Structure formats: C-alpha cells, structure tokens
Image (cartoon, rainbow, N blue to C red; front, side):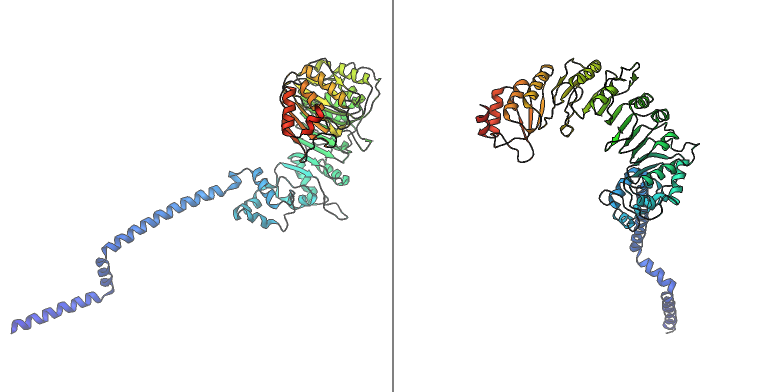
Amino acid sequence: MSACNQDTPASTMLDRLASQTIASPGNRRFSLIMGHEVDEVDIRELEGKIEEGMGNAGRLKRAQNTLLNISIRVPPELLGYIFLCIVGDHNRLRSLHGACYRFLFVCHRWYHVARSTPELWTFWGHTLAHWLSRFDRSGALPMDLTLNLDQVSGPSSPLHGPLQVALWDHAEQDIVRSLNLRSERKGVLTEVLEALTPDENQLHVSSLQTITLHFVDASAFTARTHFPRLTYLELAMGTHVRDWLTIGNHTGALTTVVLTLKNEGIPSFPWIPELLCFLGNNPHLRDITIRSLETVDVDEPAPHHLVPMHALERISLEGSCGSVYHLLRRLHCPQSMDFMCLTMAESQPCEILDTLGQSLRKHLLHERKFRTDLGIWLLCFSGFIHLQASDTTHSVDRIQQNSFASFQARLSEAMNYEEYAQLCEDIAACVPMEAVVYLGGEMGMDIVIRLASMFPNITKVDLDYVEVESGFLQSKQGGIKTKLFPSLQKLRSQVSATFSPWVMGHTA
C-alpha cells in the first residue's frame, strides 16, 4: 500500500516535467528540429545551391555589363552608322529634337551610351539645322564638316552665336579633318570658312585631309591657310581660286585633285600656266581630273620645261582639244601610268589630233592611233585600250585593267557604222585576244557578224537595242546578251537559234 502510494507521486512528477518541457517554445523548436533532421539537411543543400547560383548570376551580370559597354567594345564609327540609320530620314540625319526616342529602338543602354559618347557626334550632319542640334556634343574631338543643304531661315545667320564659337574652338585646336561644303548659299559658306580661319596670322586647319568646295569663293581661305596634310582637293561649280601658286605652296601631300574650271560658261580659273604651277608644286599627285578646260591659242610656242609628274597613275581631261593638247604637252608623265581619259568637246582639225598623238607617243605601246571624222580616238598604252568619242553622252568605258585581253567600245547612235567597222579592223590587228564589244544604239546584225569575223576570239556581244521593223532584233528588257562563237558559221547558227528567223533572212 505504501509502495503504491510512493510510485504514484513519482510518475505524476515525471509527467508534469514532461508536459512543462514540451510546453516551452524553445523545447518545441528543439523537438521540431530533432524530429526533422532530413529536412534540415535538404534546406542547407538548397541554401548552398542558391548561394552558388547567385554567384554565377553575379558573374554573368558582370560579363553582360562588360559586353554592353559598347563605347569601348564597338568603334564609334560603327555606332554612328547604326544611329544614322535609326534617326535618319531618307538617308539624311534629322534634328535630334523630338527624335531621341528612336534610339530606344536599339536598346535602352545604347541610348545612354549614344547620349554620352562624344565620338558619335564628330559628324554634325548635312544641314545647318543638324549642326545647331549636335555641335555641343562633339567636345574636343576631331570633326568632319559637311554642308549639303541649309534649312535654317531667318534674318540673322545661325553662325553668329554658339555655333560660330564652336567652329572657332575646333579651328584653334586644329581638329578639323575634312571640309565638304556644297550648299548654294554662298554667304553661309563664306562665314564657315571665315570661322575656321579667324586669325590671319595663325594656322587653324593644318589637320585637314579632305576639302570639297562648291559655289564659294575660296581664294581668301586658301591664300592664308596651309594644308600640309591635305590629300584630296575638289573645287567645282563656280568655286573661285585666284592664286594657284599660293595654293600649291600650301599643299604638298596632295594625291588626288578634281577641278571643274568653269560653270555655265563663266570662267572661274586662271589659264594653264597657273594650273601647271599648281600641279608642279604637288609632286605626289596620283590622280588628276580636270573638266571644262578653257580654249587657248593653238599656235602657242612649245614649252621649254616640262612639269614632272613622276607619281601620276591616272589623268582625265575634259575640254577643248586645244586646251587638252597644250596641257598635256607640258606634263612629263611616267611611262608606267595606268590610265588616261581624254574627252574633246568639239571636233578639231586632224592636224591637232596628229600633234597631240605625237606628243603622247612615248606613252603608246603601238604607234597606231585611230580616229574618224566624228572625233573617235584610240589611245593604247600601259595595258589599256581606251576609245574616246566626241559625244560625251556616249563616252567610252574603260578597258579591262593591266592587259590587252579585252577591248570594250561603246557605239554612239550618231556614228557611221562603216567607219566604226573599219576602226575595229585596225583594232583587231593589235588586239589578238578576247574582245568584248558593247553596241549601243541601232546596230544591225550584219555589223555584229562583221565584228565577230574581225575578232576571232570574241566572247560576247551585248545588244542594247535593235529595230524589228528593219529585220533586226529588239530587246524588250533593256538588253540581250548571248555568247558568240569564234567562227562566222557558228555565230549565225547561234543567233538564229537564240532569237528569230528574221536574222538569217537579213544576214544571209
């Protein structure tokens, strides 16, 4: 009895302690953890994987940020082309005012890069409106100035303000790389040139490498400015330069020059002696193009000294025959010169052509020269055969380079076909290889077959237009091309099988 009474209080006390232990929050957490040991291990593994994934995500984010830093990874010129296509309207840059949202078509980050990358704005656009909208973003970086249109209207010039100051700053820092002015507003162009040379006693555009000037009097600009790095010069469309000798002294690295000597009959350039002084002061010239040469006296005495042009590779002259003759006879061109194109605007007496041919004889691989009363003239030298017609609308195309393997002639509608065929017979005597003949205008198949017989190795004849009413062929899509075989019999069979029985009836 007493034993039972002793056991009961002990068990009751144990139950009370157990209930207190379970009831405490800390012990409950302990019991929960102890009862789910496997779940605890899974949570730790999951936390480890999360940390590893966050580390990988961080590394990917850093790599992405590096790739997105396009101001470093992508050249500014490439970005400039991208945004030119996005912002441009009909291939012309518009004012960025109200159009910046177009940058978002690429991506948001590129938008911020474009707005904060000065290299993108070294090209200010084609109009004064473009200049005004972006000149302040270029900073102190080399600049390319182009002015083709001007859409800014108002009583005052837009150059009288921050834009003019920006031009002065770029000129003072000598960071103008190219100048391309083609606007017809001569006053604006003059102000641009004056802004680039504000101080007559200092040089401000000695870094210029390219100059193109149309519709502007550039005499003051060129007379007081040196261009030691200028490699390309184009003056045309009424551009006046009065002191060729001064310009020549201020340039020395020129490799290409393009000159149009007059516009609409108004002479704007001096005579040939000044032009020769200019060419003589630029011994590195490789490419010369001169258009609209003035007519000079044919009886002018022969020159005592020739202007050496040792680096000359190409020369193209257009004008009166007398002017072309008097200019060429004063130039000492290298025998290795690659290309010469002469365009005579009007028919000249044969003795002038003979004299010019004699002066160029040192360039000819053959002493033959071919001409007709219509002014067709063939020059053969340095791997080229070049046929030049007096009709500039149907002027000649170049022959394949560096060999006599091909001959290409363009036939004008006004030419005498018999004279042309006779000319081709003479050409065939000195061109024994393959020939490609382009026949423009109304050309009968009898002439085609005759040419094929003269050129045994002819490979192709392109027929631009042939009349059907006269028993010839007609091209409905602008041109017919067929491969002609060497012999006349094969030529006839090829033509008859390809086109129409009219040909056989006409050429039999």
